[in-house]
Length: 318
Image (cartoon, rainbow, N blue to C red; front, side):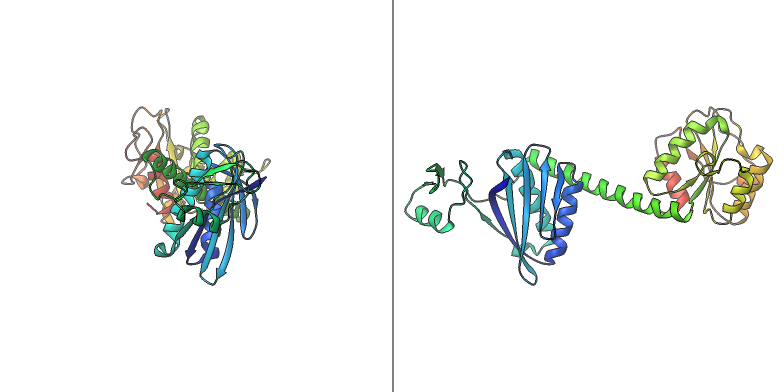
């Protein structure tokens, strides 16, 4: 049960957009697993332990209050990471000068909220503790304000949360993009290769799909019972690029007359035709005349990153 309130953040800006973006990024962070999500509230299970959540109240147009709350099993690490990440998010997205933080004092024995007026009156009397009116637990009033400083270790964790959120966002975008391409048969690149190199080609193809790039590969896209030449003829007018792979046998797929004709058609349409050397290729092979002068992608080298070079060649985006 989520009952322990800890802090209220007041802020100004695009309130609903700030909240929606925060809710999604927490889900993608890798540290908080979404449990329930509503229009104005969300709860998460923390990998560090316990449940946590937030509730949004739109005070007026352009001004909101975000209340954080935790289950009793939520440990200090969970509370700190959750609160710090939300504070950083608000600083990025809201009007920074508008952000105010009000600490909510709650009894660690029964979870009852201590009235803010009572806390203030005790402090004015010079007292640093208060008794819970429900269970008589003695509660410290020392250092109840929020410090905006985070330790070096905490900062490193928050950076990792951001990286994980960005990575998952990119994966989600790529998955959505790929599904649309599959539905419309909108292939980005024809993977031209010798059958001996099939395992390596499939690994590269899977990596391309993870990035939202749809390759045409006979084993994946050729309907059983139909000749591959006819299937490729139907696609060749629309496929945007071709990647020509050369492996350990040091022979190019252009040595097969049908593939040679298809590659020449790509070249005639002024599509990128990208020679790609696989890691097990011992020597740099010779190319047919129509491919001479093309920039290679060499998977035998680490720099420049061959996968990034291949993607650049296919998409035109560096």
